[in-house]
Each structure stands twice: as C-alpha cells, then as structure tokens.
Amino acid sequence: MKTSIEHLPVELWISIFSYLEAHDLLQAFTNLNHYFNQLIASDYLLFHVRLGKTNHNPLEYAIHTYWSNSILNRIVSLQPINQHKTSHIPEFLRWHCTKLNQLKFLKMKLRGREIPTICNILPQLHSLHHISIECVPKQMLLKTILGVDTIRICQLNFLPAVTSIIYESSQMSNIENLYIKYRDDTNNSILNFLLNHMPKLKKLEINSPESYFDSRDSPFAKPLFILLELRTIKIHWSLMYCDPKFFESLHQLMPNLQCFYLDIIYNYLTEDFFNNLVCHWWPTIEKIQQANIFIKCRRPQITIDNNMQMNVDKFQSTLIAMNDKYNGIVKVIWMEKVFVGYRIIEISICKS
Image (cartoon, rainbow, N blue to C red; front, top):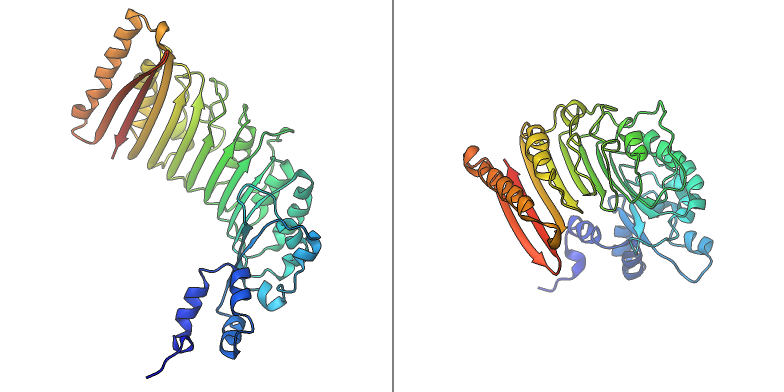
C-alpha cells in the first residue's frame, strides 16, 4: 500500500513545525501543495521568528511580504539570530506590535536610541510572558518593564550604566523570575530599584562577575525590600573585600527562602576571610533548607607567611569537620592549587 507524508496526522505535522523557525518553515512549505497550505493557514500552527541584520533597508525587511496578519497574530516567539548582536526587531515591533496578539517570548539587544520606541511598544504586547533584553540600563525602560502586567519572567543583561537610577516609583510588578547581569552598579541602585517593586518574585539570579562590593554596597546588608514569595536565589559574584555583614539581613529580606546558590570569586584572600565565612556568613546560610556554595579565592604565594598558613590550616579543619558535625547533611570539599606565584583555594559547601 502506497503512503505519502500527507497521510501523517495533522497533530504530528503541527508538532514538527513547532521546531522550525518561521522563515525556514514558510520557505520550505508555502505553495508546496494544497495540503501544506492548509496546515500553514491553521490557527493551531504558531510561529517562532528569528531576525537578524541584512544589507537591505531595515523597513523593507520588517514589512516583508511574509508578515501577513494571519502570520503576525500567530507569532509566539521573537528573538535575534545572533544573541548578542542588534537586529531588526525594534523596527519589526514598531510596524507590527498591534498584530502580535499571541507573542509570549521576546528577546532583543537594544541601542540607546531604540529604548524610547520599545517603551511605547511593550505595553501593547498583551500576551508577553517572558522578556529578555540586553542594553544600557535606563530608568524609563525599567519602569516600563515593571508596568507590563503579563510579564512573569524577566532577563536583563545590562551594559555599564551612563545615568543613575532614581529609587522612587509606585509601580509594582507581577514578575516571578528575575535574572539580572550587570557590569557596573556599585551602589546597587538598579538591583534595589527592581527588587523594591517585585513583591511576587519567586526566583532571583544575580550575575555580577566584574563588580566589587564593600560593607555599604551589599544588597543583603540593609532591609531595603522584603520578598515574601522568594524561594530560590542564585548569586554569581566577584568580591574584593570580605564583609562580615554581607548577608546580615538575608533572612529579613527573604524570610521564606528555601534554596541558596552562591558562586563567589574572592579576588584577594585576607586573613579575616575564613573567620567571616565561619562566624558571620555560615550562621545565616545554616538556616536555609538547601544551599550550594562555591568559593574561589587566591593570594600571591609569597605573601603567605607561617602565621597565615596556620590560620588557613585551622579553618580548613573547621570546615571539613562540618561533614561529621551535620551527619552528612553538609558536605564540604576543600581544594588547593598552586600556580606561578599564586595559591588558589576552592571551597565547595553543599547542604541538603
């Protein structure tokens, strides 16, 4: 018995097409035959669009003949071809935002001049659930994102700020998951602004590998906000100073925190580091149900004298002893590596 691919169930074709980018799908199957034309016209078929840069006029690209109303109102995902490069997405949105009735995921890199246009567009995307933006942070953009009621997942990759962020705003957000990466926010103005206006936040991930904090700058040292719904926090940070009060208000700020992931690179090992870790940081972290901590610190080998070595050995024994003290609930691994002129100490603490 002869069969053809048209005999496959429609549901299977819809599932297969969901893995294809819209351009590829339309170029491959449009006008292939009546059967596939009907499939492409089906309201059950949703489109994932990736846009890049071309040598053509960007407006011509944005209003390409592909973009009929029947296609636009079935686009659920819009993102650039190259993750960290600009694209025609702002022009595309400017032309078509009112037709994107089902757009749920939006990812883009913005130039400064494009931010005002995007701030006008975002409130018109009534189905937007997940937004991912890379740009220089601007006050108006932050306020606009907070004001979009449908957004639940927000990813922000910020370049160094050129203007300060004003703290006050009455706008409260419905965002539940926040991932933020920033390269320069020494006063935590951006982070504090966002967290002050996200009362429904359940998961927070902060990535700031190039920032250095002192006791005034730790976002967890002062109770500037309270996140009652937050259950999980992941921190990837680079520190220059070991502040004993770095996590002092952690439980006051996040009283229902359950999972804590900490990945810190400590750029210069000082003698008070281990004392702060054991005597000040650990009592706070100990109250959390699940913790996964990785600390990497370094110091020039020539500056480690006998007294400091005795101090290091003492705290190594104290940390390793946690393996027995907590009856297997806590697992501590201590590793040392010596490179040319430097000693690297890596500490892994897992509490479950």
